Amino acid sequence: MQPPPNSIANQRISTISAHLNPPHLQVHPPHLQMEEGLGSGFGRANCRAKGGSPGFKVAILGASGGIGQPLAMLMKMNPLVSVLHLYDVVNTPGVTADISHMDTAAVVRGFVGQQQLEDALTGMDLLIIPAGVPRKPGMTRDDLFNINAGIVRTLCEGIAKCCPKAIVNLISNPVNSTVPIAAEVFKKAGTYDPNRLLGVTMLDVVRANTFVAEVLGLDPRYVDVPVVGGHAGITILPLLSQQVKPSCSFTPKEVDYLTDRIQNGGTEVVEAKAGSGSATLSMAYAAVKFADACLRGLRGDAGIVECAYVASQVTELPFFASKVRLGRNGIEEIYPLGPLNEYERAGLEKAKKELAASIQKGISFIKN
Image (cartoon, rainbow, N blue to C red; front, side):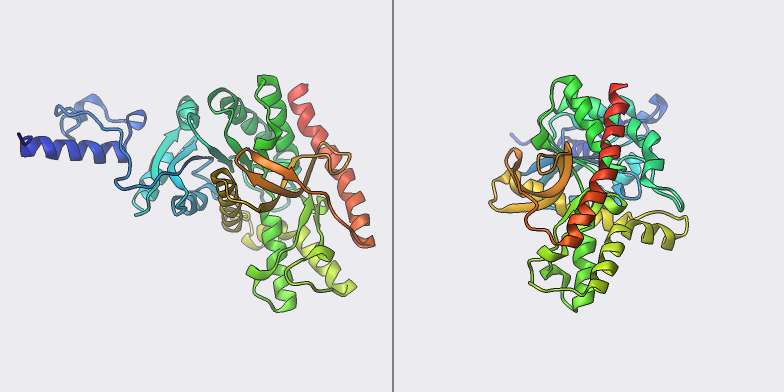
């Protein structure tokens, strides 16, 4: 016996309605529910994209910001993503509605405000965190610390409670301090796994590849420059002597120019935008590139190697950015620095001194 046509129509409307406006985001006052058909006898279905392929569940925390919005769009395009949760303290319903119209397989759900954080986090495989205030002209990454440190702490407390096994990609600046903050929060909660916490320094690698390609007249897709240390100023150390695709050499003048530009790429964008923002689009691109590497690792792909800022024994510092191999459990292997030339050894000593202070600042924020 076939169900009546109006029953089929109601079911389809219910499914579409659930996709665009899940129950946790319903804001309809009672007197509008009948007018909009919300009280017409059918409930909202738990919608999944029809024909969507299996994949990973990813949440973006800070999805309404300058990095979060393009990051959400690019992650919606990733075929490895089956469910995409967008969380922020404001404006997520609009971003969610906009992104959800894209005809790709990932189902998009939006969450707004602290009261919906746990719903946003539950069941996630990968968390990408660009939440926080952006840099403005004249600001250093340390100027952001007091605001962003508190934001990261709150989000990580939620992660420890709701999805302690998820891989965490932390973008919120200053990364040199926020990754230690996250680690201390997870330690307090008894959920810390250093292999699942990664500070995203991919933008430094992306810039290095781009700037080196410009100097050499190459396609940047075929350039691979390791960038180690940290993610701010002189802590960013491009290992130009180890640039492996293709093998080449630089003059001392080129090394100075490239190192300085890679270290100050963020400031270059902040100044060019003249108060209207920071490096949001290139950061979103780099974040998606790194997130895709993490997802391929989770899938079991072999040979996934990227640079990231992680708990490390490569140097005497507790955290350091270097090449890591990614796999089903996050970090599978951390690679040593390899041979450094004299210029890079001097840069490493400068980087470690500043990095040590930033790490301690993050740890003290939680312990004190």
